[in-house]
Image 1 (cartoon, one colour):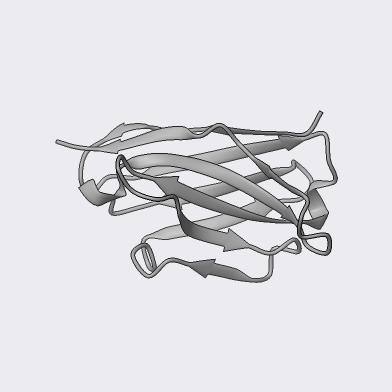
Image 2 (image 1 turned 90 degrees about the horizontal axis):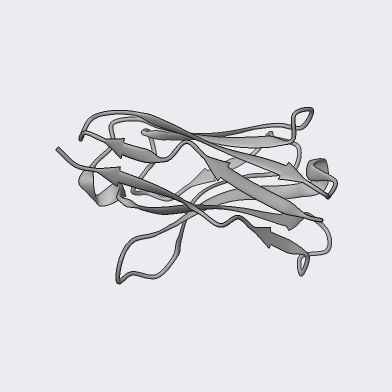
Length: 119
């Protein structure tokens, strides 16, 4: 069964750091482009960062550039999001997403992990 399981969320003070991790199972992770999305209360889900299947190309939302870093390990079947200099506006549920790099209709979502930035 295909699965993406996020971990690492929690409560952090403004200016702090968190590292999210997503563990994949049940599919060939190395042929999937991976992304992190987030959804704040009352807002639409938005793309935060993405990394291609090979791990040699990344993209970031303007709001997180220079603060967040996405990475992947195709041996351990994991993708991570290092979040530094966190702001209150980063508060959201963060979701892991995978999409086959050729067959674009094949995609998977994790259930999400809550990140709360507050003093």
